[in-house]
Amino acid sequence: GITTQQGRQYDADIVISDADYQYTETDLLSIQDRQYSPSFWSTRRYSPSAYVLHIQLNDEPLNNVPQAAIITTNKNHDVYIHHHGKQLIVVMPVPLNSTYKGQQLSSIRREIIQSLEHKFAITNLKKRIMNSQSLTGKDMVQRYNSYKGNIAGLQPTLFQSGLWLLNNDSRKVDYLYFDSSSDSLITPLLV
Image (cartoon, rainbow, N blue to C red):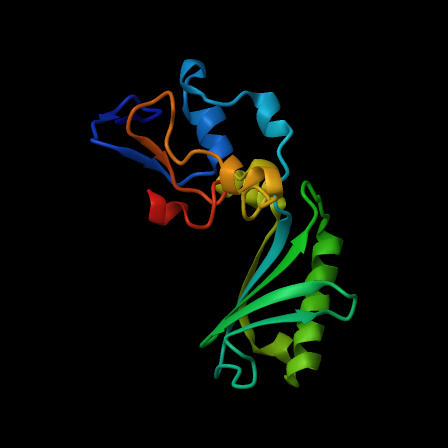
């Protein structure tokens, strides 16, 4: 089972952690229940962080924007777009531990909006935005406990995938399973 910070205990047959693998190991488990040391986590290679921009439009959907696309901005940044109805989500990968000041974030937002307007022949996208919210690597750490702000866990390098993939069950805590992107994209199916 689990025990909350307030001391409430919940019994369970199994526990599945969907939090970042590293966070579960180093922050949620007691020292004797951890499989990996802090030095292990510091030597892993992680996916990049990201700047995520969520836009809600105030009028009709953007008919000429595909549901999913990858475009290159006018400053040669690749961005991934997901479009559904009046919602537009744009993800720009950035290096881990990137810290941005307000001006830089405004500049990135402007770059993305201008690139969307140009690529998809959208007139006055800025005026059509009812609401927008952005997330950075710092938000990934604070909101989602993502190690160093990564967006997809460990990189699938040769020695971090296949035979060397992290276990999706704990070797130290019976019936504890990990369902996180730090493991693999198929971990939910395995769990």
